[in-house]
Amino acid sequence: MLKVKPLAFDSFGVRSMATFVETDDVAVLIDPSVSLAPKRYKLPPHPIEEQRMSETWADIKEYTARSDVLVVTHYHYDHLSMVLRA
Image (cartoon, rainbow, N blue to C red):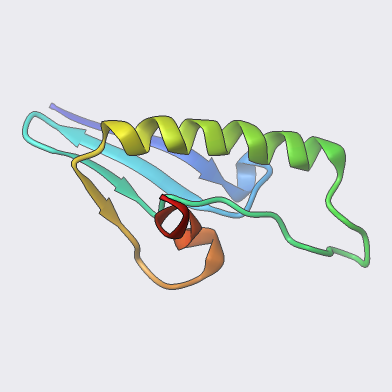
């Protein structure tokens, strides 16, 4: 069995690439983080973006607890802040 679940991506309204991968043997969370652009087009994040970030953080935290391994692909804030906060 192989399951792949995207948790947070730009198309979800946040900056991230958080992905949960599960096999019969191991559960892996890739890039366990999420963020927003501080200013886009000189505008602060919209309240809907803030809400989406909160929702995706909740998902990432849930899947972090279910994971055997956390993988950070590179050191950008939208890929590793969960690791730093954990």
